Length: 261
Image: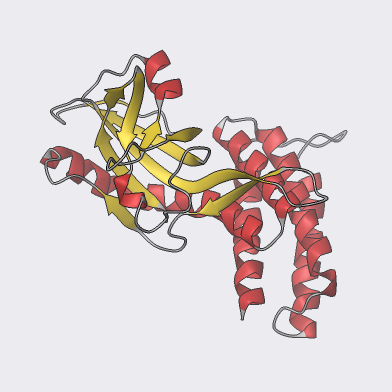
């Protein structure tokens, strides 16, 4: 799972920000202006921690602000906090999942890349002064957050493996699941599965037989998702969208791990 950050909202130069100093040492190449972070905004707590005022469960991409000399980098969450009217001092619970940046290679079109934050780990960044009730609430939600983080960190892992198109399709599929666009989600999750099937054509996963079986699984999964909507006589609702999500994420993670061995 990525990094769970809980910080009170602050205001700097008319921007609503949170401190992300805990990312500066492990990721100095990313904690700079021009880089963004894909986050899950999970909950908003009052300044005394006594009440959860909202639980948006919203996926957003926020800019990192250029740190001033000897100061901590900040994450600009104004695009969410200002429209929602969240005041300074309220605690925001953010799951920082992937760094997002633009990459341009000679002779290639610019593409958006995602880099996972602490892939496969569970880490938290909670201030010592945090109200005890917030800590208790966070511990209750940890399993749910871990599952969301695992799904979205897979995007960054796909980018690092060079599977950029699969990563883009998985991103769109996961975002549409969060927005309850079920048939749209299935469409892009299906595309990510097809992309993986094409990718392993010239690869070996463990053995030739296992590679063949994985390819067969991907082909059958693609066929099943094709029955879940956007075609005459088919439909796709929430159960089909969640099944497609589980398939796409699980097989992506398996293939990436297997090819590293």
